[in-house]
Image 1 (cartoon, one colour):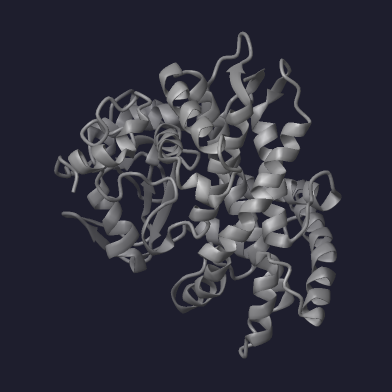
Image 2: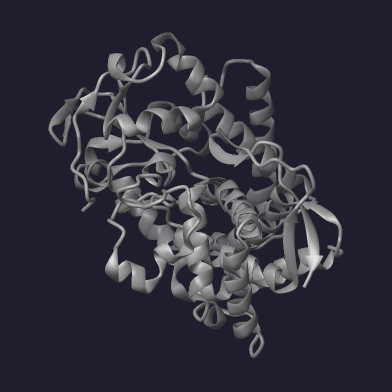
Length: 448
C-alpha cells in the first residue's frame, strides 16, 4: 500500500497550463506533459476528444485495473484491431478462454529449464558482438543492443540467426510498421495506402519464409530447443485444430515484436546511467570482477550478482522503455470512488508512477540501493509501483527471459569495457510508442 491515499478525478478544466495547448503538448513532448500533470492528482481526466481518457497514477488504482477488475478491461480497440489484422488471434490481444489457452501453451517456453538452455545463446551472441569491437572506437549502443537482441531472440524463438538476412530485415520493418499503426487511428488493411501495401508484402514474405520451416519441423518432430519447436509440439497435441502452422508463426512473431525494442532500449539506458554515476559503476564492476574471476558466465554466476539486478531494476524505474500502457473499459467500471463509462481509455504511465516521491524518495536520483534486500525490508516498495513488465495476469510472459538476457549482456560487456558517452552527446529521451534516445546513443569503448 502506498503511503498516500488516492485523490479524486481532476477534470480537464483543472489541469495545469493553457487549455488550448494540451493537445500540442501531448504531441510534441508526451513524457514532459505527463510529468507536468501527474502531480495534480492520482486520477486525471485528459482533454482528449471522442473517447473519455483518464490517467491513473497510484498503485492501488493500477491494481484495480490490472488485477481486481482486469476482466472489465481489454486492450484498446486500435491495438486489438491492428494486431488482429496482422497476427490474427494472439496472446497480446486475446481475452477470456482464448487468452488462457494461448498463455498455457506459451508458458512452458519460458520455464526455468528452457531459460537455462537459452542462457548459453545469450552468452555466445554477446561475445560475438564484442569480438567486432575495438577499444577507443565509438559505437551506437542502441544499434548494438538491437543487434544482440535480434540475434538472441530469433535464435531462442525461431531457432535461427536472422541478423543481416532478408527475413531479419523484414521482421524489424514489420515491428516498425506495427507500432506506427497502433500509435494512430486504425486503418483497415484493405485501404490501398503505401504502408498497407508494404505491410502486406512483408507479411507475405515472412509467411513464405517461416511456414515451410514450420511444416518441415512438424514432419520431422525434432525439438530445436526454441519456442517455435515447443509450439509445433503443442500443435501436434492439439485436438481443436486451433494451433495451425500459421498460428505458430503469428505467436512467435508476436513475442519477438513485444520484446525487441524494450530490451534493446533498456540496455542502452542502463549503460548510459552507469556511465553517469561513478560510484555505482565502481561497485558494479567490483561485483562483476569478483564473480567472474573464478567462474565463467552462467545462470549460477548471475545469481551471485545481486547489485547487477538492482542497477537494472533502478534503470528501468527511472527510464522505463515501456513508459505508457493502456486499457479500455468494456463496461462502466468503478475505480476507487469513481465510475468511468464504457469504452473509456485508462492510461497507466510507469514514467510518472515511477517518479512518485512518496514511493521513491528523490525520484530523479539514480539509486540502485532502493532495490537492495536491506532497503526492501526497511522501506518496501508497494506492489504495482514498478511496472516495467506490467502486472497482474497480463504481465509480460517474457519477463524472466528479458531480465536474464539484459543481465548477461551487461555483465559480459562491463567485464571488458567501460562505456563513455561520445563528446558533445546530449541524452534526450523521447516517446515513440516506446521510450528511446532522441539521437541514438554513441558511446566510446574504453578497455578495462
